[in-house]
Image (cartoon, rainbow, N blue to C red; front, side, top):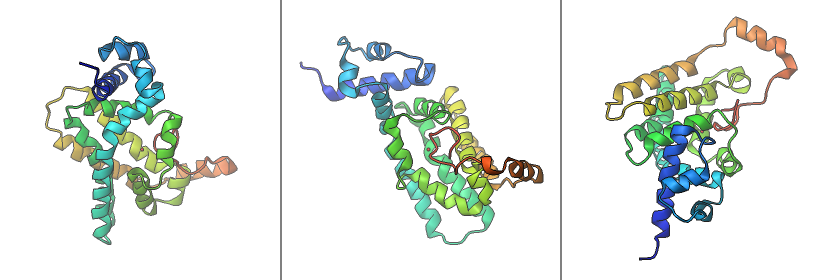
Length: 234
């Protein structure tokens, strides 16, 4: 029976997500991924994905649509409710950030590996193949950032990157959970993480922080950018 290109591609993606999660995106060779996927042809991975960045993009594309759909649904619900008390609005938006990702804890098809990979990406500059996604205003994470911004002091958005802090806390905690044993009930964990993210968004700028920012003057960094870029606001 001739090889099935679709099945080969899926095996390569599955092998990559597990090895990327366990050993790091740069800690495993393409040859090792090819072997783990059971491919005798040493060029199979390059044929299907080109290079490491192409393979990483395929891993993310496997999970991204579901997360996008879920987050957009939650943001639609948030906007349909009109004006909410500030604390309720803040927690509702925190939930819209956390819940679509937390669902991956129960996804047996590489969901937990995906969360561990995303935690790696939030600390590094995204590969070129991801930059268009980061800049796309139609992406749910960018929509979330726009909805959160009015709740924050301008300095928290422009110079303290408070939204990115919330995103990074979310990814780090989900990856920590994903690295542990599966089969647990994740409802309490998820609810508490939403509480934590909501608290991050509610953090006020202290007098000391404001003074230190003032001393920095014109050296302030640009506004927070896409969530997969270092120092910016997935």
